[in-house]
Image (cartoon, rainbow, N blue to C red; front, side):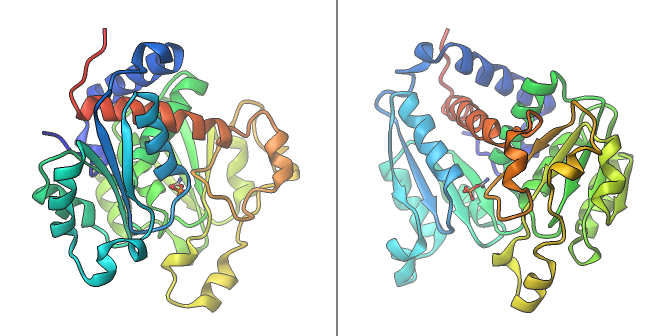
Length: 306
Ligand code: CP
């Protein structure tokens, strides 16, 4: 039995297979409509979500399966003090696979050690968000045609943004990837990612504070919101929350084929006027998230459709 806790749980070859499966699902949805008939996914969300929870549920429904779960800890027995370990033992009796989001880093990993069904990390604190990474990889591969030879700007809250941490972990394994890390000094990428993941893999990167300096050189601009829920000090959040606002004027500095991605939700780091720019692909990215989660469910349940 396999789980997905970190993007590193899949080799590059396995990621390629999964992305190819997701593309086949995109092109031939009818072929997969009964693939999970009789199967159930449990979505265990101890933190708010719109996209991740609903895209897992849409993915399972598209595969002919069913869904159950909770969308906040307040509406589950965790409010009475039940542990993650006990919860997952129950869920293993009710469902065939589960997706868990939790505010504590490592909670889905703990759950996976007690589970008799595959556990998918749907976001753990400020740590990792591997299924967002699968979504991001499919978006880049589908729209750019490659995952090699890319200069990628990551902009915003690089300290707490778990999507950024997972994406860097996944992309350092491809050829000729360069990163431009755009953040205020208070929200720099954590030192363990700089030292172990980037420098440890000899991946070139530079850190800048001005988005305008980076834009002309980028193939991909990955915007993120400042993660209000991870701050201990509200005044600090308010001071930093509008550090970067991408608008049409700044987009004139970028190349005509740079793509703008964002894991969403957006607050105001991308002006709505940018939505009309053909380079803004963050809503397409949401659709890719459903295909890639369908592929992931099939892969972890070891279901093969010819
Ligand atoms: N991208 C993402 O994780 O969105 P949600 O928080 O809405 O699930």
